[in-house]
Image (cartoon, rainbow, N blue to C red):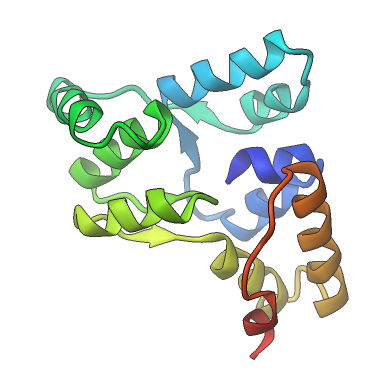
Length: 154
């Protein structure tokens, strides 16, 4: 999720929307982002400035190692984050619907992109038109297609 907003240079939207909450990344997500730096992308630097890295406990790491074997189709960062969220009762957020579904199947509360975009509009942080522009920017910069956009505003 952070990557999508960092790529469009709008991390402040996440910070503003969740100003009363702590947003973190895991060591594996940090590693994935440093790989992007190696390829010349600069958006990870914004993520590093905005969010702290939360390290796993021994128990969380054991769960993460188990998940690595169980669910090889998800990225290491997502699996590590799901493990932390499961053990600490945190909310897991991702733009990846498969990762969100897996987290929910493992008893983890999730927050998807649609909910965040809708909250930007409902909170008054962005108008309907601005949210629509944010969607277009994310789709372009993250090379993705956000499904069911029309359902956001109803």
